[in-house]
Length: 132
Image (cartoon, rainbow, N blue to C red; front, side):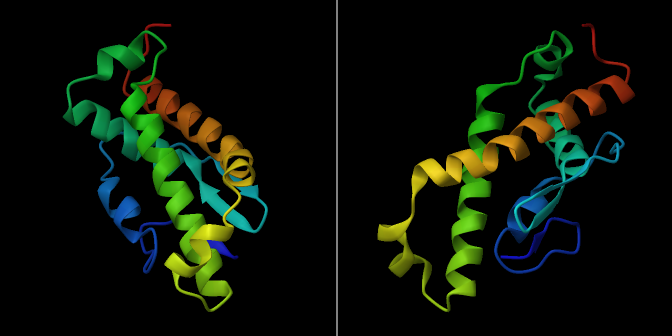
């Protein structure tokens, strides 16, 4: 399962990358988790752009992250991981679904989510909008 998130991603997860139109500069924050290489800085900056689009940057300014951001990120990562694994096993995603270990996926994505949240704070700080 060799996965990379970048602006040129195609296939599963491409919609997440496309949705992360950057409004704040991305700070480099490349992490490796298992076989995945993730640019958490770009994802964080993109998520901060979405937060700004919703007018919720004040929440981030005071050190909080809107729950919809974390839930969306976790959902997209989970979907991406399952789709990539199904592709690797040459199975349909629906056929793999009964065998997915949700606890393992949650454990796997935890450090990715953490680093992306730090990326959100980095973007807010770069924009001069972090009060804490």
